Image (cartoon, rainbow, N blue to C red; front, side, top):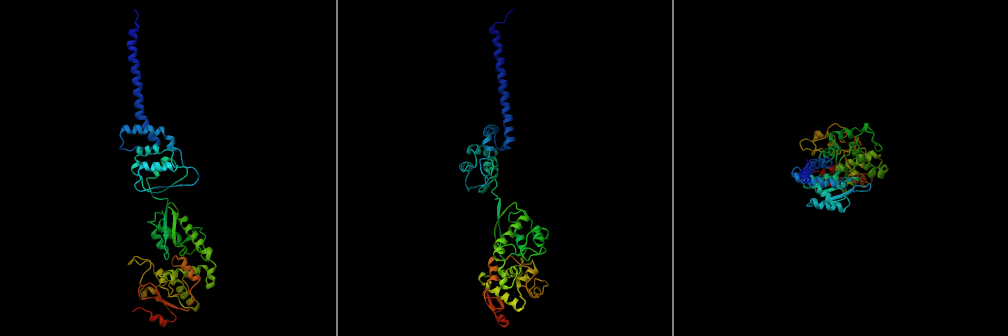
Length: 382
């Protein structure tokens, strides 16, 4: 018996169709399972709020545009600055990045942001992209507007403890206690010190006042070295030999400048105050400067300040080589970070014969100067 052609084709077609269906089913299952897996491997986890269908579509599109997202668009060796303004959405940011040549495609960048959910968490701010960065890294970096560098101010008249107190809120990863241990005993640091400073000396007086821009990741060693380097360029290199005109070494000049800094409330009185101290030194009189006693006494817990005011009679008898009421001559070291104007006041003081000064009674912060002790007593406030 023979089978007709019609009978044979009647069962073959369903088999072929079944095989095609199975192949399509396997392909669809593979796509549904493998595409998201491959995308997650390459681009990270998708946003949990996406439907399975959107995850599938985004995964397929991302894989198709993988090269645009993973190859850097930023050429050269210099970092690229970029600003995101308040109110700019993901689409606007993607377009601006593309126009500035920082990414290969705005569309693929927007696609990744939507896939990852990062489109909802972009932060306005100033950014700096390193050379060789790709679109994926840029998308992640613009989630945090924390700058790579932070401003750090050192105020004229601050002692080292006040600089340490400013560190915890500065954005720098420098422990205040470690900082103080370092600057009060730099012997083991290998730090190059200015003339007159011994390894056993504190670095008090060498933290030149000003606004510094410092890498957030800077180490304690680099932090101190950079600021001392600034002191060298701003003060030492320019003025190191100028103090000899007043009979002072460089270190002695900085010590006296630190006292002038703390005594003068009004900057234009600094040359006058410097002249009084220099006149007293030349005549062999004690300097009797309140700020040196304040430095010696230290922290005033009642008023939460490192500069106790007013001082008591007992404070003036506090036994310390920094107490210029008890010990003649200059204290053994600076008492604060002097400003450039205070340093220049010591180099070029006013030409006077004044031996005394005390605060005026009008609350202006200015001082009354006098030649004799009797005149000095008459300037006292009632």
